[in-house]
Length: 329
Image (cartoon, rainbow, N blue to C red; front, side):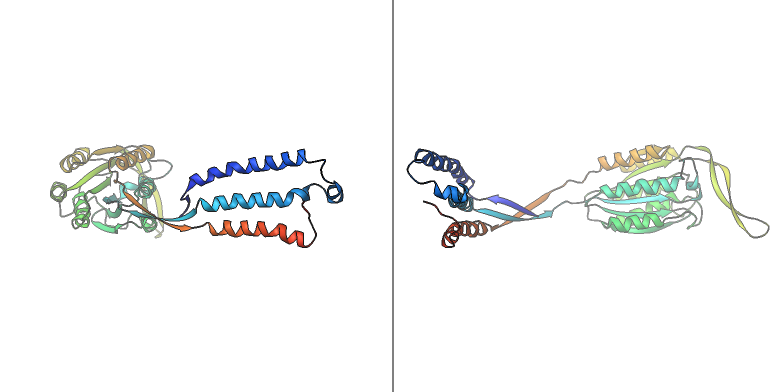
């Protein structure tokens, strides 16, 4: 990034003499109007009489600008931010296909909101773990937001054995953060169900997070009760068709609150797309990264073009005079 700087800006005060010189020039001409012939004016107009003077005046202005020592500064910024490591743990069990987040299902809305959240986390490393009946690391901790967006787009339902292994998911997220050197380590757990799978229970996983100094924010997605969920069925001819089935979905709020309380995080309930977006915005505010930037500027002298142009303006009247184009008494 380039910046213009004046080493001696006070020199520009001398520019105030330019209009004074112009005024004196015309005042002298006015008083001496009867002392010389007006033939040059009749031959070519009065502008030729004043052209050399104004070229010299402009040259003087350029020289004053050069004496102010304009400089071009080449700035470089060094980001000294010590970022936060954030592991997003996302439920992709079958119930996340519930269509109570109209016009789309829970998972689609959650992915869109997560993209917005990731875009704001400049300087932070973000990773993604997905889970259903077991857990899978989708993205390691990274600052590559473009890659994270592509991986979020690629997350689909029914790619893991069905179930809700909250304990396994938390443990997987904690495992990704255990070697982190960041001062702040955070897990954002997004789920809409009750733990019913996995070899590690949620209480043990929460204890692991607590021991590693990992703060867990838990988000219960959707409202408990009967919701329409698209299900795939195979008919008698082997064709697969999708039907919407009303399912009774329960969100284990007590468990999610307990996990958040134990690790120093917070529990949130998202009942629609807007509330989910507001929750991620609140987490973004709660976990702000302290920003420290050092700025270095290297200056390069830029007065030379002004001097060259001033010299050219001083030589032009001389050249014009030699060619007989202008004349000045």
